Length: 197
Image 1: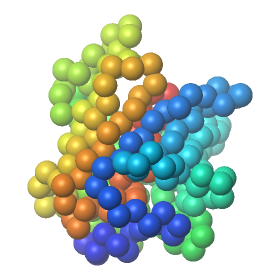
Image 2 (image 1 turned 180 degrees about the vertical axis):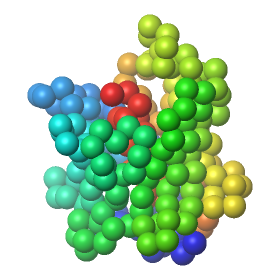
Image 3 (image 1 turned 45 degrees about the horizontal axis):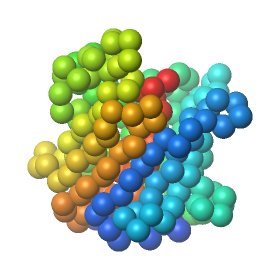
């Protein structure tokens, strides 16, 4: 695996270990909208989940509306497949997000685009909660709890949300030297949007 710095997105400049990602509502076309903030409450990026007939797309913009990066499904209706994260300002394809469909556990992986080596994994903690979220009438309001592990499988952080109409995730990373932070925040948006829709 390369150094986490090589997966940083131009224009973000993240240096912390705690962040918040929140679904803030829907736009006029009923598409979910998201915002990421640092510990001071400053906006890092915003995103609207664009659901197309051919491919799902996530354009991420800064607080001024300038595009930072995109995440796009590499195939049609890619519920369990690959999503490519591209730095808009450089054109560099940075990472692939992939997911296996499972009723009992959600596992997303962040991989290098060149050799597909594993950079980090995001795994739901409780099979029971995963089932409840998918099958109970109000299951979508039950909080998410994910463990973040590095390429060696060591736990390096967590992504958690509480019971709410709109998901708000608290992201804490103990060791930012072992996982790429920027793609991790983007993956949180993608995971919530794909699972909810």
